[in-house]
Amino acid sequence: METLREQRRTEEAKIALEKEKYLQQELEVRQQQADKIYAGQSGIQGDLLRVTIFGGQVLMRGKHRRYSPVSLRIADGEQKTVLFHHPEKRRYQTDIIIKYYDGLLTFDDAQGQEENYSYPIAYIPEWRKGKQYSNISLNKRSHSEARNINIVVDAIRLPRRHD
Image (cartoon, rainbow, N blue to C red; front, side):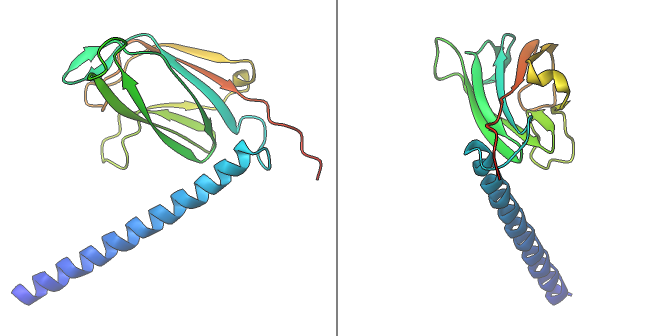
């Protein structure tokens, strides 16, 4: 009986290792595609975004606190861990995962957890001129527990390629 349990644990460990290896390879492929978008070698309008997050509060060290505004560029297929910190007290900080896959921008991604309380925003043509999403609050079970934050999404114009 004990031998069967050990075999089962060994098999589960192998499966978990293979899954992790596959996910890592997938991330590398997506990052290579994102690098091509940044370089202007690939992509279409909407594949490169400027995202600005400001106002409201996020959870830092067990309390909801205001944070310094954050602005970043993100390409389709990319995931970024973004540091949010208090404007005066640098020791108050938290990392929040933002990803952009196939036209879906996700704030506070749950990283494969069973319960996902992230905030997804699907691509719309208005992003070409900039679109603000105001007073966003996330579930208290989310990582950031964001309250009344604002997210501005602006599609960066890509250079024309002549193939």
